[in-house]
Length: 74
Length: 563
Image 1 (spheres, chains in turn blue, orange):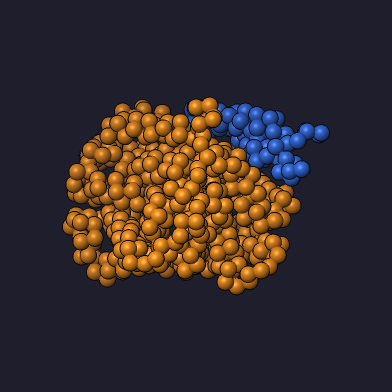
Image 2: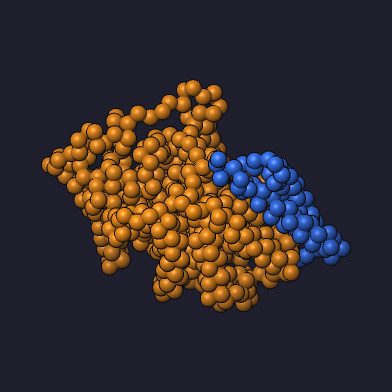
């Protein structure tokens, strides 16, 4: 039996971290909607779009590669 | 107008710090998780040879994205304009595809553990020893330089203590690589690949919105620099004096695209090790080809920010050696652009991308050092007949030793003024001649064991001698780089070219007068004596050559677009 089959894929770790980052960035950007930071092009609210994008990418990888009982993970 | 530079360029908020802390927790967690999977030498040094083409490919590229790659080339784009993109385009297309399609089969089929290991099989012990020792030295020097550069950036950008940055980042790398070996290094490199891209991508997106697209960028750069030389790839390379880099097209084509790029991508074990970890020959061939697509897209997050800075920053950056109080150096262009567009949270992601870049480069160097030291120095010359578990233990300790030596190097290089200069010098000393030795070994049956050793030694020593000559008397630059108008970058390109030519000439001449290896000892090592499995049974879209041809088309399009 191949041990590698029981190893969590790297994509799962990436998914978890990106989802976490997305949540932090989105929450921060939403909390600053009324008083945007002093940066160039603040009107585009890049934090909101960036946070959503990270949650979408991270969520996809987390769900797609999550550990499932009774299933080989590789 | 010059802005007064504060003691720190960027102030991080709580969300930014959380993002950085979670990154460190994740990489250490991955190392701990993979500890139980790295018990045999095959697992520890070659990640079990079970990586998919995508994982091996992204890791292959990520190991190269460390160093001063992000900061240094963004700075070079500010200084030289679009010419800096040559280091991503002509330095990627022919060489990475050549590695995948032509050279990888020899590395993979010979079942060697390392590039010096291949040289041992092809030429013999003396060439392996010379290559192994010089590679070990180079990786440690590179790793230390990376570490110092990162600490310096963190000090300038974030106001962090330089010793704190060096010790925290290097101990983290030591822990996760020594626990999980190449498994851990590769997993973290793929993670770092995502962070680098997602963290840096905001600059080109918002930057292009600010300047009004490519045409707006060209107009703004022309207004600021009063020259169009900054937005062309080839049209200004007809003479040394006609472009900001002070280089001729022959230097870019033959020195960079021919020798430096081929040498780096095809023989530097730091990157080749990742492709060797692939699960089968097709995946090993695909790994550098997949990496080459992303390498050619890297200018989006490295070169474009430098060009955007030329257009939008309200002050001028200066060379690192000429920074006065209140000024910023070229090397700070990327953090400056991050600070321009990123609010809390996104800023933390951008800074994490920089830290990830530096750590992936260091982990790559340290894991390659541990492999070469254990397999090519310790095993053949110090303790020959030990158990597999013994060599894994040595590999873990070598990782820690490599980090300690890197830290020592980091403190050593603080006395040098130009870091980039020494990095380029190391490549031309060790990588350019090595490419000559490996190339002749793979494709010329007549190359003899003695010739391999003397050619490599002559190439390395000649490169060091040329470097020393120019340091002693800068007038020699005009001779080595073929023009009185040549600048430092041209010297690096031509020095690499000459050292490769000297290596090849010496190898050929010595081969003609010494005894060659019998044919049966060259099977699986040399073109003509090696049966390479065909990809013809695969659908066309799964064949490496199909994707290699795609890189060629992509490359040609970019050259035409930015000529």
